[in-house]
Length: 433
Ligand SMILES: [Zn+2]
Image 1 (cartoon, rainbow, N blue to C red):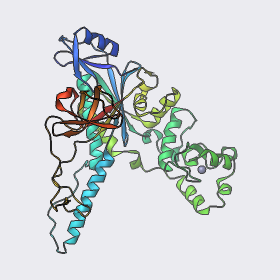
Image 2 (image 1 turned 60 degrees about the vertical axis):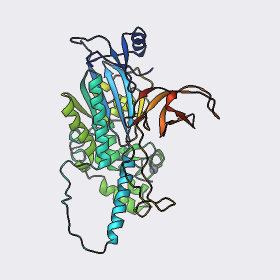
Image 3 (image 1 turned 90 degrees about the vertical axis):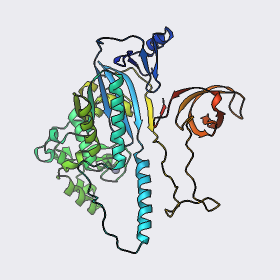
Image 4 (image 1 turned 180 degrees about the horizontal axis):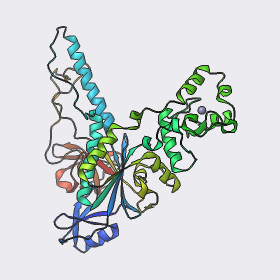
């Protein structure tokens, strides 16, 4: 089913989220109108004095490229969204700029005094990471405006080092399939670098491995555990690690040296996730933080498929028993707001020139529409592969008197007079399902 619909009263006060069918009925009866296209929100023509709303939990699973969002009401997951970040692109373009500057400056063979204090302030995040924090913040604010959210739950860390409490020294009870087991798995993944320790294979399901086999008196302490691929696990069987790795003395030395060392506590904390939690605490009174081990435990226990928004739904204690009502998450991709560069640079970092040796001018900005606007328009005549009719699409490029839209992989340009309406003006995101 589709996501539930956000509902505002005439004073833009958030009301209970409703089933899409009910929203359609309200709209066809003239009791509500579309307020926002993405995420779909309706506005009622009545004002509610004190809306007696249910309580909603906003759940977030922050990731490097994708962040999952879910809204839970009781046991039901009624809204799912997956947000794609553009941190990689930001990093790339800033690195390019830095290279241009470095190149230009190193050509100057004069000494230049230091002009600025370039010390990074406390809590500084790299621009690509700050973007992640800020887009998540934007969306949390949006949800708080549209929905009576009472609590935010966030997956803050992969595993809880405090709960494992010096695992290498004191030892923890480990059992496959238990919550503690998942926390330990996440801990081991971080410690051993997400690969098989014996053959260094990556992107394969890893199994928890006893370095000294249990049958020979090996303990369940984390210091005796590592991760290996199923083949290596099988091949090792109940051999001692010394026998199994007799052909690879360097590796054996490393494994034996690494195993008893506890993981550095810094590696459990992720600065962006930490900043996201701090941001949420400023926006909402009830913020709960959970571990990735628990998320995975909840997801595996309920036999749910892996996806960013389902992971978000499985965050925390409230994720241990959920009913997924939504099969189709809203996919949101950060697209940025184009470039403001006045002169484009060539490979050497100098202004790029056209064939008349003049600097290439920046693209003309049009006001009638913008790249990224979602529009509904009429196509008057048949085109090569596209038939005439009414279409919805995202403006690819604005043209002097109209727009260009991609339909089924084919670029179609149309004049402004064939525009029926703007569905959603460009806000730096692309939306799909
Ligand atoms: Zn292996």
